[in-house]
Length: 205
Image (cartoon, rainbow, N blue to C red; front, top):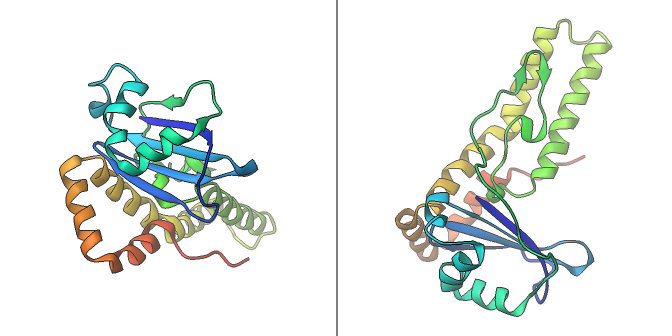
């Protein structure tokens, strides 16, 4: 289950924060108009023990002192948080019925992996370039077009999506999450390779 709202408050513009709590994790970042975007993902089995979002937030999220301070000192702009359940991060077909899939239709990326919009735009660029080559006769068959798209999509995004899925599964399980956090605190050098695995390399245009 995902819960999201926009807030007014204090948060550095150049910082994307990731906080964990029992059964989930929360991302915090500035968006347009100096607004703070706070979105968290929680294991539904963990969430359903509580009556509503407010009770879960007060009894679980507030145990994290950073989230407690942030949420208690920020003013929500929305009338109520937006929520969505039954989010599926399962593997999806990149080509289905001869249609080349981009964005979330090709694979819903975990919030841990960074900017999903940039990934969708990148996939659209790969797709459009191959389609132009196909229409100009440089790619000789529809089968070859589909094969090339699948190859290039996997080369750019498969590792990111798989790494994000594994890391998200860990963070949604309290015991595993606690163990991983202790390891990362003790060996902070692991953060950089983890970021590379989930965010990919810079895209040079």
